[in-house]
Length: 204
Image (cartoon, rainbow, N blue to C red; front, side, top):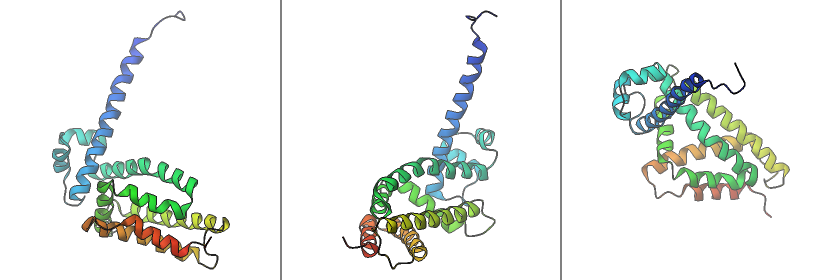
């Protein structure tokens, strides 16, 4: 085979793969909206297929079962949300960044609804999202605790506060205020978090 020889067969194989991945991503995004609107427990795989505008067999082809589809939805959410949160906190510090995160959440009601719905459904250990939410919550508290330690080192946090207690208070406040906001969008989530951060910030 000469150096200039073309190998068209390889190109032919890559296009279907790319198309398949694109279709899978579209199905994940559509399933996210279905879960956010109707929850997980109340939907069969056939109902999900109808909600996302595809066939039962195509969903099974890409995901195998409803549990795998939910896992793909949850992982997709983390892939989208985690990087910008990390960058924001890195630039501004936790105390200033958290209210900004809450402002952002006001524009993604579907994400907040999905989170609240799964929390209500997944308290049972046999729910497919139970372990994911338990692990994510533990990681959330740990990350907030670490950022609070950094804030204290930078002199922005009152020095006599227990960061382990504060981490749990902040994460619980975030989850609680978001659940309340779903019922009443006049609630100023960012304003409430700003007020709390002011209470624990070191006076300048």
